[in-house]
Image (cartoon, rainbow, N blue to C red):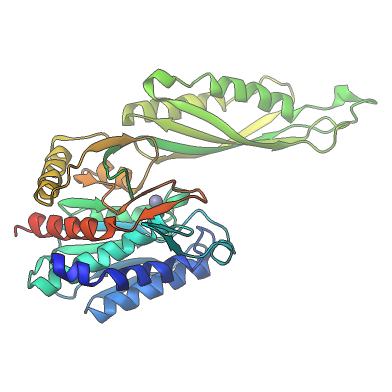
Length: 377
Ligand SMILES: [Zn+2]
């Protein structure tokens, strides 16, 4: 398979270039759908078919498999969206300098789509039938928490034995555990009044929100990996008006599912009453990604992948990541999961994001070998 993948180095880079040069920020439905169409066409050419799960607001989610893949055991998940707004690809299109490729989403995670496709092509080319053991889910809202694709991911993953998540490999590391998180939005309603003439007739939503922020931040226990951040606030009508309205966006990170439940309750408790007379509060939101902790079974999956890596001369380590991914979702429903199986690179979500071009071959080969091994080959 190695020769096949090496021989396809240029086509892989060209595919990555075409994907990077289409803006596909999570809210750019048309761009995401175009990226999906490019990939669906590639898979069609090798006999795979694509189920399109249409969505009105977000990009369409895709489920891709071979017609002979009757009971695949492996689900591979890769997202189509990026964090970059419209116009980014035009400003700084795909380009390669020495061994690094740049461009919006190049490592998170457009290059992963090339490694997935060419790993499957390499398997087919080698005469292996392991490609029939795989179903791919390409979702479109991972960067904003996979809220709209979560059901689909859980449904497809439910009867699988393994979930391979193709997020990039920071420094070549696999990811074996991830923090979980939640997002909440708090609206505070008060009563407006002139700040000079009749302040006593008003009820300040900002004052109440300020009290809430301090209480929420006090829930953080950094030594346990629990953090709460009120990262967005907005409110008030004018500087000389008692604020009739204020709102906040709240980010929660946790290390264990138990902490998740406990903190979810604590946030709801704090936002269930007010201390500023005349104000009311309204909280929405929930745990969007349950914390992912390693299990015996996922440990075995890591060992298998490390063994396959060792055969290729790679020394694969695994780490815990503070960020969430779709692995949190598959692990939560009990499927042995591994992440960081994409190509090597770094600085995700930044202008300086890069793909190590020379990692494409070995990471594609690793992925193909892992699929083959997990399929009993
Ligand atoms: Zn990603």
